[in-house]
Image 1 (cartoon, rainbow over the protein chains, first blue to last red):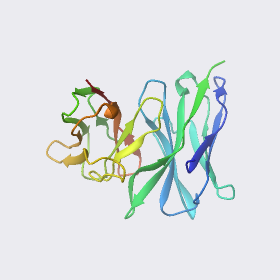
Image 2: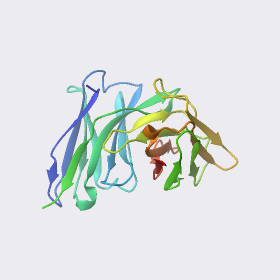
Image 3: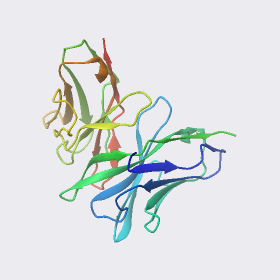
Length: 125
Length: 111
């Protein structure tokens, strides 16, 4: 069993809002050691970074500029989870969505070192 | 922002060596760490190289990473090719604002 687990709907209608949650089975989302990230992969295509949050004290968010107008990430420390919200979805948002952990090394981002299993979200009416 | 460009596909015979390149379009390749991920069909990506040239425990030493400032590129080299190496490989780095950039991916075929 991995550390990260995505949950959310497998099917969303066009123009609606998609919300996914990533729950940590151990460790804390409130840490200076990691960034918490979302990555997606459309069927048959490559990896696309969506955004991440650094939650040490007050959260700090970064988003892919191409998605920034429609996505947001939030953190719930009490539930030890972080979430992704994508508004106004279209069929182009159909993808496997992964939550992942990004390691820090000497204050610099150092790579994804843990991934959830991924969850397929299909946008269709 | 910048792009990371990888060849769409590479191939090699069992026992041979292949190299996958990852060229950064703007900014120096050695400014931020480069990682390489292997993804087999239907599976989660796994790290084969992190911080330019470091190999996680459990990854065979047949996998190696390097940075070449003169070509502004990173490379993943796999020696002693095995059929199990057949997968998609992605390079990944960051820009100065901590935004993540993935390469487009390279399909490795072991003939």
